[in-house]
Amino acid sequence: MGGYGSGQYHRRNEKNATDAMLCLDINKWRKKGKWEFVNGVTTWSVNGKKTAAINFRVIAERNEIILSWLSNGKPESQIVRLYSKTQPFGKFRYYFICGNCNTLRSKLYAGTLFYCRDCYNLTYQSCKDSHKGDALARRYGFTPARWKRLWDEDKETELYMKSDLKTRRRLDKKKAKRDAKYY
Image (cartoon, rainbow, N blue to C red):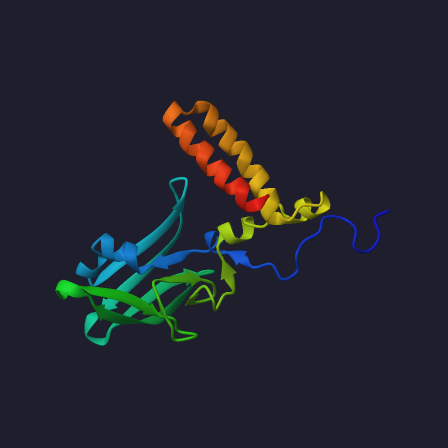
């Protein structure tokens, strides 16, 4: 017992989730009116405690933002180019241009520098969670799709018991249609 390969199984090539990274979202800046100011500070916090901060300076005539921050006590900076796309009725939509792959992005994530999700090989947490039960389903001889339908039937039964007569009739028709399709 306890030989090579024993213990918990972890995927070697599993991607990190975007939730674990600090993110610059250009849409949040736009909604907060950050474009009105040439200089500003963006902060991140967890449970009301400030965890990180970054200074930015918008240079509108060159379509650039200069980001500056402290990393291990020494100052760091990065120039992020912007792209503005005209929208109907004279408005603009802004995008970051990723400094690594030169693609238009609305979000950049903090690593050593601010790059896009693809450059840091990140995925969304919902994608990581979507196939967690597949191995268990195969162990019991189900396809993952059939396992999901069985799981969802429990939720439907609970909803059915709480619903009124009109909703129950609609759910009965939906179940009959689905059963005819799969059985």
